[in-house]
Amino acid sequence: MRPPRAGRRWVACCDGPVEPVARRPFFGWSVVGGAMGLQGLQALLFGQAYGLYVVALTSELGWSRTAVASGYALVQLLGGLMGPAQGWLLERFGPRRVAGVGVALFGAGLIVASTVTTLSAFTAAMALTGVGVALSGFLTATTAIVPWFRRRRATALAYMSVGMSLGGLLVPIVAASVVAFGWRPTLAGSGVAMLLLGLPAAGLLRRDPERYGQEIDGGPGGLPDPARGGATWRSTGPASDFSLREALRTRAFWALGIGHGAALLVVAAVVVHLVPHLESGVGLSLQAASAVVAAVTATTAVAQVVGGALGDRFPKRQIAQLAMFAHAGALLALAWVPGWFGIGLFVLLHGWAWGTRGPLMGAIRADYFGAAHFGSIMGASSLVIMGGQLAGPVIAGVLADALGDYRWGFTILAALAAVGSLAFVLATPPKPPEPPEQRRDARS
Image (cartoon, rainbow, N blue to C red; front, side):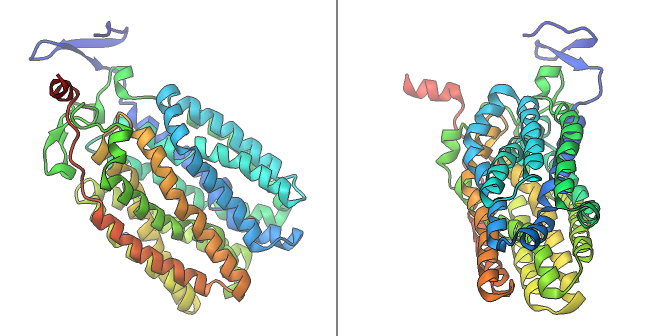
């Protein structure tokens, strides 16, 4: 038992042990705030803004859309390949240190990218950026939040995702900077902004609540678990937490990875190719296209808040199944429904699908596998997920270069997303592993 720390009040529980009751505010929401800030900066300065640079780089340097899209694919590839090692780093050093290093590399990568003149230099800059994006991105932010929440886990992860949407809402500012000053000063300024704003945000990513004398959700643990039929369990209890090896043996691990990857086929393709499609295929100006991006992210932000609340009350994987069909419908509307009606239908469907499904991907894994080894399990999942992140932009880019527009590329991705909904049908909750003491008794 840890000794009392100054500034805390200690009370005796009914069964004998003495536990701390923190007088300080619950830190979980400040962790959410830091993760939200990092997600927002990544979306604003790179993720949601990448389509702007596709247009600028192809215009000024004469590179193909496939070549520029490959830079984004490289970032996703590195994120996936680094997943297992990053999960270990998160468990060994904690999310604050990992995110801090990531922010530094991310900012440096953007500054280097602003100086490139050759495709090889651009690839090297994207590699540096990709390492930074991974270390300060979704896996680190999600791993930081999961230990702090159980009953409101989906809501907390939804608020984190709102940061990404808020960053997307500000993309027109980046577009205006590209138009007024050029893409090079804009990239360099984005790198500096990432360093100045990202490091304080990373500093808020505290480790698990026990280190601060606090409890999950800011109160007593042992809350009902809807993913397990209402059974009561603690998210860090030995009867509920899977090791990475145990998780890899379950069907749920692989089904969730495949379903998540199928969703990111659509998301990654839209991030990279929406602005070029609206500009070349629909005839919108760069700033008008960026306004559509802002509309998508505004819709996504609303859906994230609603989706988090729904995920805390209803089966998460069924919500994910519906979202996959909405992803598919959104791409078909963008490809084949003419005019602003098609754009509006795409905005509503894609924003709803992305917003409601996105926060549930981490929450459902934590519900199924527990929080103790979440970083390692989510990191290993990245190797499965990255297939979609890589394939989506490349499929759309290759077919656009070959056929002259994005229609058939978007159609193929829509079909794959619809088929991917079957993965969530198969992602039923795994049987909890045996507690360590039962395993020892069975071996003795």
